[in-house]
Length: 525
Ligand SMILES: NC(=O)C1=CN([C@@H]2O[C@H](COP(=O)(O)OP(=O)(O)OC[C@H]3O[C@@H](n4cnc5c(N)ncnc54)[C@H](O)[C@@H]3O)[C@@H](O)[C@H]2O)C=CC1
Ligand SMILES: O=C(O)C(=O)COP(=O)(O)O
Image (cartoon, protein in one colour):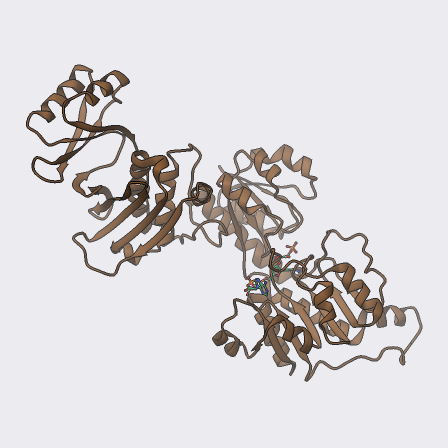
């Protein structure tokens, strides 16, 4: 039975779903890094929110871990490259809390417009300072949206409903999508100079870190109000403090901080500053959504291999998975074949699909080829770390999908380039389910790639097959299947034999010494 650790506070539905799906679950929240490292080895899955930091060290100790599920959106608390290298899938729930977070940004915008927290404090202190609090209307004002993805677009929709004008800076926002959203796509500088309110909705990456730097804050309109419900680190906190103190920025509301929990900050107590403790996703509705989603996704993966919302491997829906299974088996064997034959010489790989295979999701097929290929170097390769390992080796990977009708109802071709040029192997499925090699390095050979095999290239001449069979027979090695192909009569012939037991070194040497032999290689599938 797979075992999952829920290490951050989550709606009880998550644990209930795991149990209902036959997954054992422990809920242990608030652990230190050291405490987490001490127990993580027991678990196949780790369900988190933003508090648990899934660092390289934690992953190194996670010897059984297969999946990290983030009940939420941002995964900057997970070392994804380290997880990928270890073959651990990282999933999130990309939509479950977006409405809630957008609503929090709008709530903070109103709180800034009318200085609500301070007005509340003053009133409850019995001061009744009616003349002290003079706010601004949002109607007719310009909202500058930095990041126009899921949350940003909901914020835009709500802001348009409030009769605001919305300008958006997002390098990945298409002009068509901007029109659909009813926003004006602008450059960052234009946004900074035009916005009365600025709200941030990007992930924290190298391109967004400090996007509101001192320099950029200086380019904003005097009296601007800034809201950050995305991630600490998008706004330079020191620079924001200075701009609030100087009065250039009229107000700022941060839900997120560079260091969390933010127990202290130079911003605390600054007039015009409002803060909430990373509450963006904290509503009953959002927490139910993300808890259900993360538990269902993780249980699917641990029980049936279904992959949804993974950040480091292609998705594979429950409907697609059985359809793709035989294609992935074929792809993995072709990858393993070419990897064993060409190994270190490979510089790039092209994976071509045609016929029925071209109608499927190609990413899992590519992942399976790379798994087979990289399996030559490591016993712990899986679909998650194979692309990562391929990249580490500097392999260039290309995918090609052909519309054409070929000789086979379905075909996967794996071509590799080496210093000696391009070589390829191709395979099909018999009866829609049985992987079969149909071509190896330009020679047509039909073979089932399974178990222990022997690959021999020799000069096509009478008597060779007999001599090879005798050598194996003398060594007590039984031939299971025998597949032969040749480039041309009297030219080069290719033999692929499945063996009941591996041929030992002495017999391999004997075969190498047979007249006309060019290549001999033992293969394992
Ligand atoms: N405060 C909270 O509790 C919550 C915070 N979040 C944060 O909100 C962020 C956004 O979430 P979603 O909208 O769902 O993500 P998303 O992926 O749908 O949208 C992010 C947008 O940022 C844009 N972007 C990327 N780099 C950019 C750059 N350099 N400049 C401008 N735009 C850039 C992307 O093109 C994309 O459109 C998350 O990454 C997460 O960190 C999410 C949920 C709750
Ligand atoms: O989903 C996100 O990205 C969030 O920031 C929400 O964080 P939380 O789950 O509330 O710790």
